[in-house]
Length: 446
Image 1 (cartoon, rainbow, N blue to C red):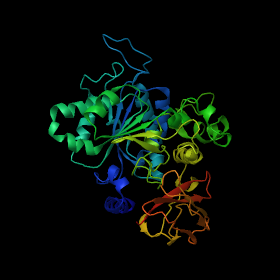
Image 2: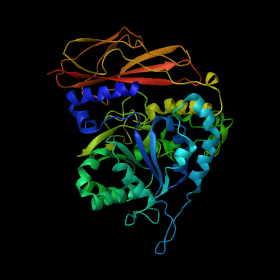
Image 3: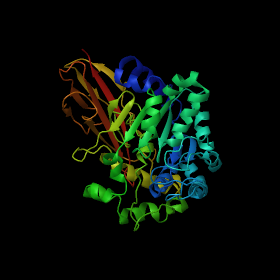
Image 4: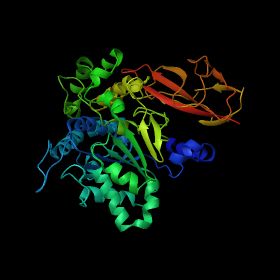
């Protein structure tokens, strides 16, 4: 039912919000986001994949594809191998996923079967950095997905270099040039850095209407190898040895045990923002890059091109502001690997009464009502309403009674044409405490 509501919401956005129109109007929402992962197998990719597999109920995985990058490649007759980790690691993780799958299904029957995931594993362009001359099983799989009959977006995630994605698009260009416009509306490329040059030299030049989102080092780096030098103390505790041993590494089954921790601490997951962006937290981050959510927030850097907003002095950090929440959420998922439903915690469901996109008049009083918010475990809920100022265009707005379930309110400022993003944050009393959000977007009438 929630996905049907999302379809109706998209229709409303199409009619009323030009900013969202740029990003989402070309697509028709399906039940779940459609995802293809390309990975160079680096240790932080392997760490990210452990987390990814515990969230596979949230999307439809259409490809788990080995690729290369400037950091890792297999080599061929003309190129020596460079720091190549092989491809067996993913098979081994899927074997571990198979062992915890029956328990994960107790918490959500939407988890895909191990064989379903195994059927999506392909080898792409792995010979050397940026290699996109050969058609490979991995690139051909992406072509198949891009040309299927479903018009909804396909999120092409480059955890390594985007060369296998580039090869797939080149195959479409060569074999089906008449379908390039159709594919351009469908493909959404999420880059973790530029780990080869093919996005610059091929995708953005030959496919200028394909949406490309780029997470740079000041963004994804907050949960990559140098996380300990970036995170504030209150966040760092959720990545440290004590938290990690207790909540992930020990007593949570073989998949969590495969996480390649460093000194029993969080290692690095620089690639995780690519899928954190798509987890249905209620923040609607997948609707437009500027909205922001667990995977970061982005600013326009060109037509159909967005880059992460974070710089060395930008606060709040677009990913770290959510870090405690997504670490607790992951810890709960780790419990799902080994505990019965009644023994584990599950996220609450935040609800806002009324439409999530509204046109309001200057000076109007808007009442904020979270009636209908629930918790699947019967936990007590607390509420917080706040303005997401970095994502909207209006000035600061005072929210009265911001911790009230149904008596919070705000007065619309005299700023015609601007937007206000109001976030409802609902927290349960379970262990670990989990959150869910809803984003209300107010467009101030001219």
